[in-house]
Length: 428
Image 1 (spheres, rainbow, N blue to C red):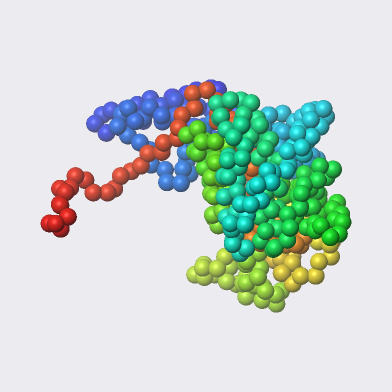
Image 2 (tube, rainbow, N blue to C red):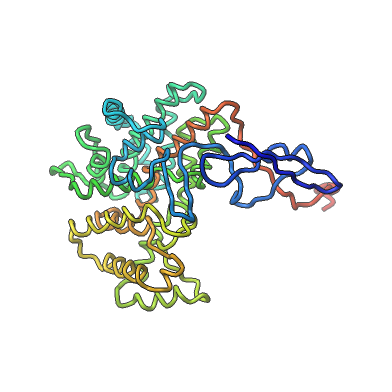
């Protein structure tokens, strides 16, 4: 890694030389770790210009619409490989050979069951509890059941925990759904694919056989791939922050789930469906388009544009193709899907949206797909968490593998009171 020097002029005729580090792609990074020796910290609310770590997993260039995992473009991964292939890539840095893939797939499939006592946890939740509340609590509780893989300093323990989380997350996610609708839990099937097994656990019932629709199975696998990792977002940073203290992996992933639950992060596709419900019918679309264009109206269209991607969301292209495949296959008659398709047409043709690059994003299309196959909006963020688990684990593992990692300790700009005289209670 090449290194240059930036000189920072400080008050009182002082200065400091700061190393400028260059990665393999993206912005150069000024190393300010020694700035504290001069009595200064940097101020960057939201960490919008701060690199919190060094990583080789995912690269994003929002201006150019680039997203790669270990150097592979997301479109190629989503259209030419499977979620478990991407899991192996994220965890190990390379795509697996055929033998490695078969061994990895077998390991995941053979760990999909959860301890039977874990089912008892669900009876403690109200039936109307949000599935994310259940997912967060049950995931954290895994550390009470799998105590033989909690030593984060043991490489083998980290590997075992990774397999367990990737394998069991679909099972737990499906249990959250089944409990919320009052249906019996469905055991995993090792003869199905990762996505097919999840669909079976979601929609099968004991009284009749369930056959996985291959078009829906393919769509679900692509949703998993497209949400597998997204660099140092809020939930990934949360997992790294929790992991830096030496917390066990199940606690770290539970922390990531809690962060993802925020509507500004993982709730975007749920918000998109809520917007479609608010619009209600195709006839009302012009009214809401006019409101979206009115800068004085607080209403905004959800699922269009992206905070990171200023050009287009590279995940949206493949998700759009998949969305139309699912709608054609299922021929679902739903007025909300009619609203979604008309909004898509307008956004791709209307000069206002085109000029501002407010293209439909991955949340828009994934929300429509999940709506079409019968997944309720309350489960959308749960599926996001299921998909993102491997990305969280990869970053957690990468952090612990790096020599000399430290507990994270952000600084602050203190604006509170200075020294004050204490007044005893009887004199206040």
